[in-house]
Length: 161
Image (cartoon, rainbow, N blue to C red; front, side, top):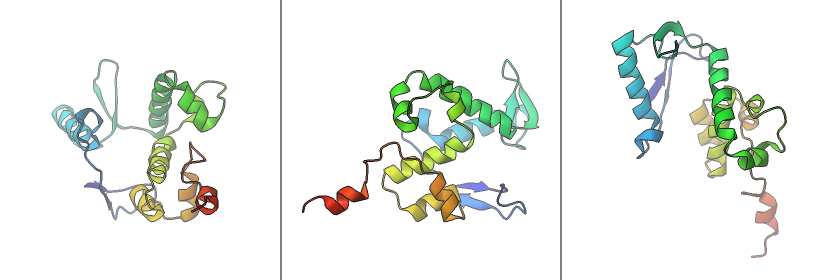
């Protein structure tokens, strides 16, 4: 369980609990990665703010990671991964022009979770609880189907029984 003490939609700091499942694979396990980072941070600086920048060579900067820095990290990672999986990206976004990175932002992380959860047939209200969306309209915009045929309602209606 993770407690988000303050967010864009919780400026007064009431806090919100979010459950994050642990993976059997330590390389993919979010709670394991977070605990490792917290130990590293505590040894080098302390605990506040949690997400900070790093200088070349790995020295911690004591300033909060900016939204622009997160966007840059997401774009750089998408560019690195996208070069190896152009087919998946084209399936998701159509023919890409101008580089892979321009199709991603910090919101891509939240949208990716919402999309993957929906395609895994998670209930919409459960996705909203996890992403902490308050508005149905906004939450729907975060779900970007990579496969329009998966869970297609016309198939469910038209398929002979």
